[in-house]
Image 1: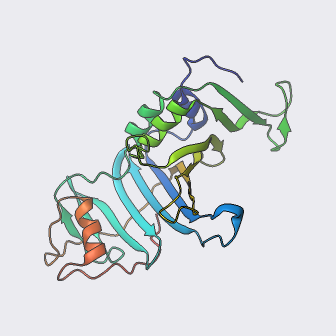
Image 2: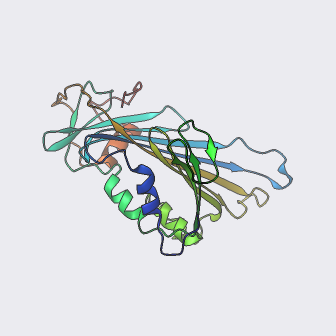
Length: 272
């Protein structure tokens, strides 16, 4: 399916998301992975890559943030925290939901409406799709038979459009003249019980101070949106011994450095 320059990623995404609904409970799962490695010329003595993964699970009730978990995996122990709506404000937890402290400001985690609006500004050059019938078999063209639906969509866009997609997550790689250069990128949308926007990109840097060790960075993002049935979450009980925190930067600071009365996060899985 070809398109002119006026087509944006927004309508393509909304078409594939149709049926998931905008009311009731919706879960958004965002997974970002970055792998950085040094590769000496000739491929000799390639260093072990350094991997960083940021996972965010956000639940909305009628498109209003209800609960979220943010987890960072990398060198050292994982760091996690929870956020929940509490009346007209929000609270945080570092121990899996046993104790909750107040957040002074509305947490900026992932805004589904802003994300979907921004997709409408990203121009698409071309889109190629697969169509499945009711049995899940690939079909090449429309015709009679079982109900058909789009299962996967590979999207082509130019470099500037892809950079705008990255900037949704503040990945402003072109703002710094010394930042690594964008080498390659890819965007696709897939549908199953949820709709998933996936994109990856690779960066390369000039040689490091060792002069013979070019640096490579490979990143990928998966954003999945799924409708949920009604769920009952545990009650939020404020712990007055926990400090009020202005925003999520303050939560990350506690996870990194600790605060009297607040233990380092050692959380188990959170069932969002």
